Length: 531
Image 1 (cartoon, rainbow, N blue to C red):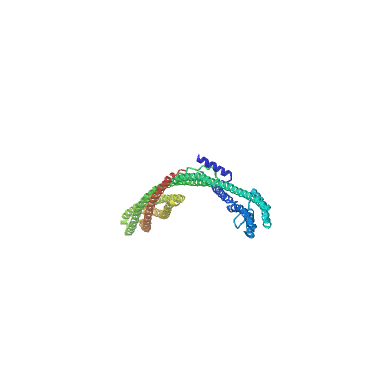
Image 2 (image 1 turned 45 degrees about the vertical axis):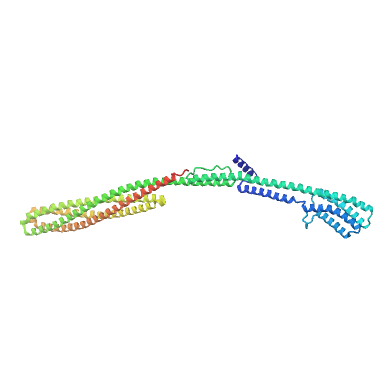
């Protein structure tokens, strides 16, 4: 009922052009002010014929009788004529003050035409009455006295009639103005009550609705909107702003949910990629351990080759000495040549094995290089995904950058290993070629030994050649031993770097899991909002 009345009043005010609350309140205040002004004006107008005017008019009645009495006293020589003239002037001055008003006595002019006509009638009778009085004073006769006695009641009667008319007019105006004032006061009270019951109630109801909606928003519920009936007043604009705010917040929360979901998916892929990286680094670390072991074994083999080459050099010197002793040592020289041939064949096999091992090392370093490149790409992808994650992926970006740095260092080390292996392959190929030549010379030496003493000088030359070649082999073997040791040390360094990379990768995985857990918590928090 009250809500319907409030809407009706609001519709009426809107029809009058007062659509906003400010305009409606201004209209109400203007009406109240107008009614109060009307009440004040009516109270002021109720004094159009003020009590002073009525009192002076009543005094005029007594003055008319007093003048008649003083005229008779003057005629009897009992009163002075000046007293009579003074009373006459007082009557005329009072009459003029009643008709035209007197600011000194706070008397307003008569505005009622009936009262004014009556006062003019009284003025006419007064002029006649005054002439009779003056005539009686100048020459008293029974006729003038009779005229005075006749005219005096008439003046008194008409003046009394004017006073009655003034009194009635004053009472009528007073009652009317009091009625107007009463109506204005009642209207003001009515407006105040109506404003409190309906205008303020409608405002408070809307504020209460807004309060309930704000409580729901505080609880995370953004799904409720206001139905805006009118959008051209303050309440409608406030509700529209509230709906716009909910719309913007809902869109923002939806985007946050989408971003959190996408980030969770990206982090899941990063976790999977880092797990693959961790496994690849683990395999790389194991391969490097095996390579280091193989290089250690190869270094021992190269040292053994060097030792055999030194022994071959010593045997060649002994063979040369025995060749100079004569033919009786040919058989012994033949045996030494056979032994040397066997050792050279063994040395050739070792060098071939060394070449095979260096090729295997080259393959392993290629695998390490591929793994390092893959690690570098994975770290780069992780850094990109971390950059997309914003501030939450900053720590992960640092770890990914460190992983990429380590992968680059691993790749550089593998390049160095490849260079060393290539040099080792070149040197081993040279040694194999030399060993083949030594083997060929040993075969020829054996054939010459079997040919007899005539070929002894050739055997001596051959043994000298073998001695020289063995010296070269020994030198090459020592160099290969040094190179193998350097490769072994570098592989140890690469293995250490791979171990550090493995540890860093594990930390990356842990950091990624932590990021994933935090994003999951963010999703849980965002899901609490109702959009």
